[in-house]
Image (cartoon, rainbow, N blue to C red; front, side):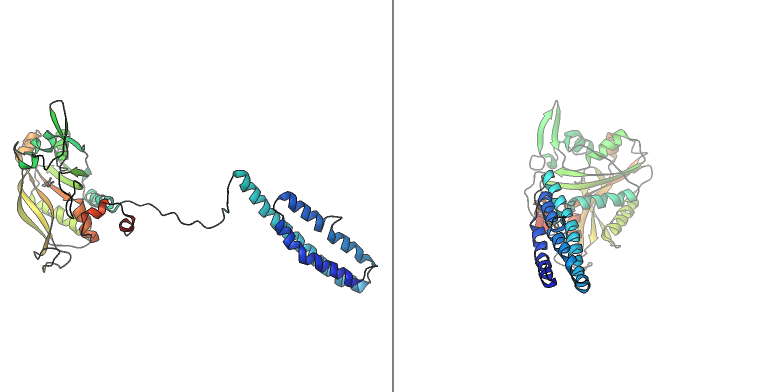
Length: 348
Ligand code: PHE
């Protein structure tokens, strides 16, 4: 006849062993064996519990409570382990190795390139000012890139050091466009004014690479053709653009310049952001930073496109995207934009 002390000792033994045994069961079959051992009819708990029948009422109550506590704990652990074993068996069936519930190590996310962001930002400002987007090929012919834009045949810009010529197509001399201005010609020939267009894109020049030059860079061309536009409209549009882009109103300056396809031609400067016009290293003490080229579309260019210069007039401008990105982000070497160095790109 077992004493209550012996029964309690047997229960204590079960209590000290069941949890570790459950953890050791790695498959549902092993867990089933474990369940039979502790909870089955012929299992350890049942046999201890059935031996309690001979105890006195008082002892039965105390020992019974201990036995029931252990039984509930064993049952709860069974449910828990069953779920764990099932999910690991499921993952194994799927061929998943390792613990998919662990937090990820964090894969770095991609993002757009700062130059592309700048191009998009410039474009979206002009779109908000009523401009539409026009497009042209990067491999152009001599006619659209030069001749129609009023470049005399012997213009120095056409010489080999400035232009990448590629194989001719038929009698057309082909080249990588040196600016986005040929899109002006394409737009004027294919559409009827009045219109306002921007033409963002890549351009190529035969240049040695340094902090301020590259053989491939980006421009946003802008042009408007109608029967009453003038230099004051050009200035207003550029002032509005500069205010939106730099987030504040900045004085701009028109400096006389020369482009074959505009008359008059201007170079547009903006007051230096670094010294507010006082003069500093960034602006070479001039108080202004050169931003872009612009002007009124040359009457010859209008005629070349079949537009009567006595009826139509237009303004045009060409923005260097790299220069704007450098100004905005305080980058002093253009080459950084092309290196694809994660430490540089990660800053934007
Ligand atoms: N195409 C000129 C350049 O690349 C810029 C420009 C565009 C100037 C339109 C005037 C008008 O330098």
